[in-house]
Image (tube, rainbow, N blue to C red):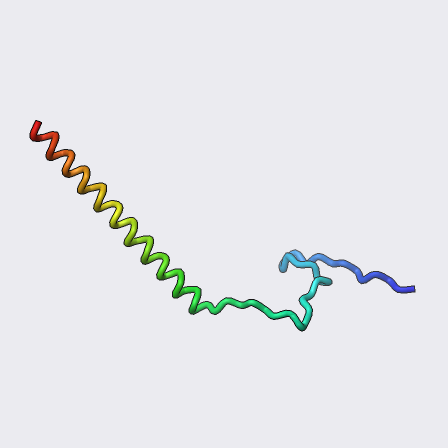
Length: 71
């Protein structure tokens, strides 16, 4: 007669201890340097896009204010 393995829950790790990855599966790890590089590019792109949007809006507001001063 075989007994089932006891299931224990570890609160600190939030994992069931009986669940384990098989040895033959490939782990998909992210290189932290590559991730930081991609995040920095995204931040830089978002900053330039936001700056361009603000400049266009302010220039439109300036043109509209000059037009309203003429009339």
